[in-house]
Image (tube, rainbow, N blue to C red; front, side, top):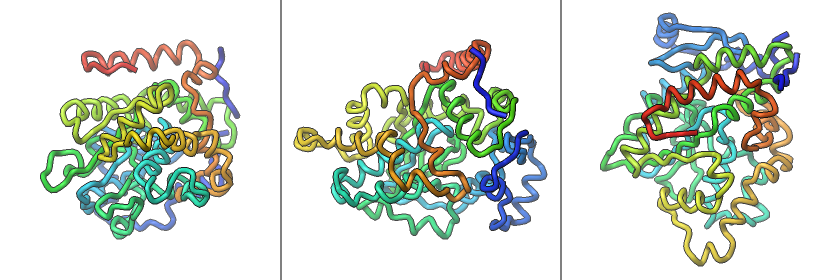
Length: 340
């Protein structure tokens, strides 16, 4: 089947404005660093830079470097990490609801998820200013903040992953079939571009060469997979497909890892079903807060809630595209014990 493409590669006004970084004043030190890095043009026509083997747009790279310098974790901070379009928004909602269920029951008619997007409730660390780190309060425990991230292991402050007596931070890594991740990424970006007949082909070329935010995606995944094997108390590796087919099992596994196990009484009263229902893509897609407006980067909120279907790539990728991604995946993961 031929891939479905839409038609010249023009940025939408919101995306164009975000890419201009009009409100950011970069230090000369950072600008000097950029001048030394390999770079290419991403699908928006903006520069994307290779730093320590991984690719980043300018603004996320700056935010990551700032966090490496200035972020001080609290004892029980939680980090949800994934490659872009791997189910991040969905799992942000789930983790927020799970950690807050005693103060905001999932059936509460005033639950925060009904009036705020998951990205408002669980911000990306790299999009925050250092002065904003301490202002994040999104759990009942003052020692626990929840952050999202798309960075590889080298982009998280060392104290977050490494064993540290004073820090018991948790990292949840969500992984998805690369083919579905790519297709979801394409549809997301295509919502912010004027149609182009070769949009998918351009993006596929970059993606398969590893030139995407936080990519190569394979290297990011294998990095967290290895950490989950070496430090299972610090890093939990979850497959998107497992979350879809056995949500109760994975929710209990997630809660236990985060130190908030679901009691038998809570399970019997339907807590897991209520969390699954509230956080479902279908439910969140219908909420007014997720249907309108944009995020801090000018991305339309509704584009974060697509279909979330396993195997959706079959409708969009050619056999050659799918085979190429499968071949790279097999080569990259060989001998690791990980299969997708």
